[in-house]
View 1: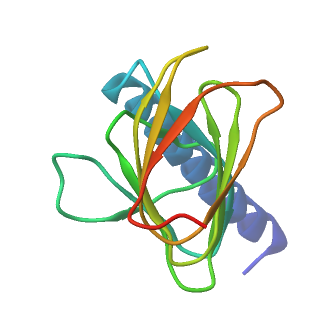
View 2: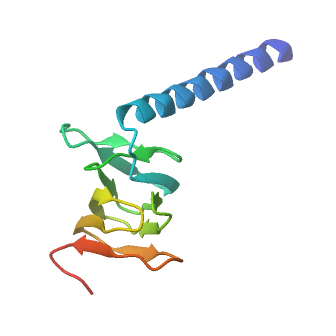
View 3: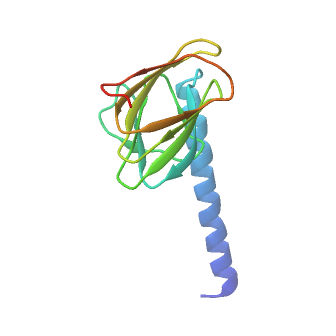
Length: 135
């Protein structure tokens, strides 16, 4: 194969992947206008599930989460999400949680089903975490 043809094919693949990412972000923003979190770091396999869905789907960098969405990290995986109130939540491997509601300068509600999370916030805010066990 000639170098020019190879370059054109690689460019076409790049453009199609870029277009797919753009379309997915636009589609996600149409699903919920009042997003509660944005994925700012993904390492390994991280998946999300909407409240009305049964199947888990892979999630990527800069994807948004709507109220009620679940997010989970699989074995040897981590994720960091930025909540809409600018708090950062880091998820360890084998963690599953639901972000129910986040309102600026009001109560935030996280439902931690299993795993470990670490919260960062530079501003004093209230955060309610519902979980079977806290350490």
